[in-house]
Length: 328
Image 1 (cartoon, rainbow, N blue to C red):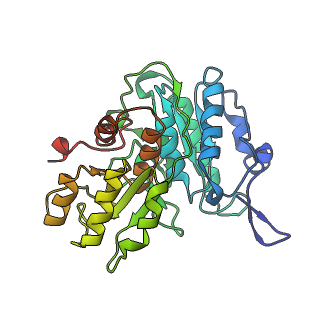
Image 2: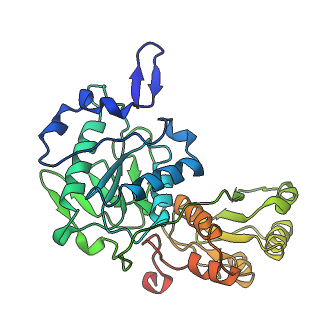
């Protein structure tokens, strides 16, 4: 984003003018190509169509470049990073997403350092022993797996974090890589898996929830993602139980992710969680809500049996979750 002094608010950056704000990019000993994907929009306007456009652009330019850096607004960066990680199956090149808390043009902007470091990382991780084969986010001196991130602050320069997985690199005076934490992609051929427009309802469980409000929506749903308490708990509300049962009977894909940023879903640890386990609600383990939503959309976009979809949701496909056997 940049500041429009005429109206006093932030507007999307026209990336064709990026060298005006960061002339240091000319000093890189590599060929940099700049491309605007579609019409620049505020990241709060992000949707599946734009995700597909970004993914297709990366796919179509995949063999032309050694690595990619994607500038993106912070509000939905974790959603887009998660979506791209599932769309780009067999990725063998670095895709680094970054942005800033302060817009380019401000004296203290963090955008400059974030972009310069992201390009250096993309160049360094395009081959060799630090080769990165995943979608990552660089923010606040940390390189993180994209589908493990979430935005936790609007104030701090480290406002995007990865609570449930170690960073991939720390950028100080030197960039300290941690290749042991890199995703080991077994596929070697890139396949683009566009998302279909699916009707998914995200229901955050809260004290006093009225499940009857959601029953009229069931006939139109493809997926229901519950955001539950703690390790996957919901209140012992019979109407809520009935809602979940009715959804399953209709063939709606039902999954459960924790509201906690750190930790994991463990159905059966408490009595109400046991109901979810008995009714084959897919537990999200230690996935973020952003990753769980992206993964649900991805799986609903593929032709497969319900049982296979439920199994894959609880299986690590792009390093988005830690298996329970490892956690325990």
